Amino acid sequence: MKYKCISIFQIKGITLHKEENIELLNDSATSIRAILTKQPNSYCFENDHCIAVCMQCSADLLRQPESSNFEEKVDERIKKIQQEREKESQDDSFLIIEKTGMLDNFNPEIHKQYINYDVIYLEDSKKDYIHNLTIHFINSVLLALALEAKEPLIIKENSGSIIFYKEENRPIYPFSILLLPLKVFGTTVIEGDTIKQVNNYYKALTSGQLLDIIVKLTILSLEFDEDILHSFLAAWTALEIFINTVYKDYETFLSEELNKNNHSQFEKTYLRLKEKYKEDRSVLLKRFIKISVQLNPANTEDDIDKFHKAKDLRNDLFHHNREVDEKDLPVESVKKLVKKYLKLHLLHKKKAKTYTN
Image 1 (cartoon, rainbow, N blue to C red):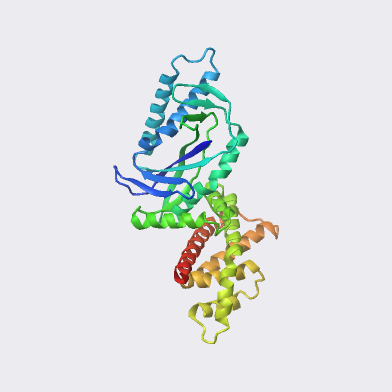
Image 2: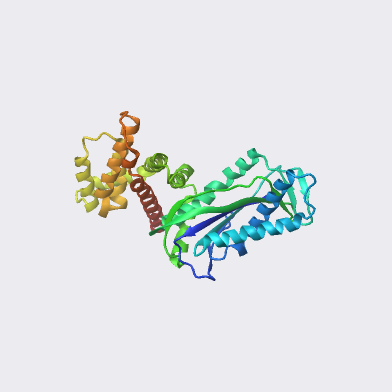
């Protein structure tokens, strides 16, 4: 059976004209579409109808007998949902992500039948299964947008739903609504180059080049924005896994270059940093230095210093049993390092691929 997962995010900080609607992404390989708009209600009716139907079904469960004017009540709920969205949004833009797919051997029992649609009760296990099928792709769209960030903005979940379809495209609305909240990201004015880059990042993030867990943890670090400790741990773990995943690509090249007599500037920087931190036995630090001197030679020393301080604080928390004030944790610094080096790595891989082809 076909399903569609709809996730709607309200965004502060993206510059769009009142009538502007931008198809940010339409990837047939992963069956996902993302639209930026100032007029969300024209794109959200299917989602709003699903939510209104399920809300009314839930309300009717408490009544005996059920409402005789069910469709009128649904229409009223849709209007209220859309009015509230317009009231809350003001000058905000909206990102609407639709992910479609197929579920095998899924034949749910129909709870109610109406003229144009059916209603079912969706068990938590099935909801979680669909969530696991879709979350990486939705997160990858959001992270791809974040990697093109230049100015801060706020993204928050506005609404979301799952809709099923019979073979004749008759919609089936489930009681259980899937919501995918997110809090903070960054981006810039949406232009042609931005859309192109978001598409490139999305394809790279979903192509298997990086572990899914890196994307998930980066998203989590932003979801925990008000929880300093958990945000720091999610961001640091994402950075640690990233380093351990990609360092061999840079270690091999660096070793080859160091065997030559005429050292380049980044090799000289590497040798200087190696000497500076020779007393630190951290394998992770040594790996990050090898990555940083190649991806970001102009700012390597500053980035290594930030990384070193964050590493020591993390070790104080977990290995040395020292008290650390959460306010001292460099959360934003680590988040920026994750985003910066993930983006640089993806650009480096794309450039290397283009060169070899």
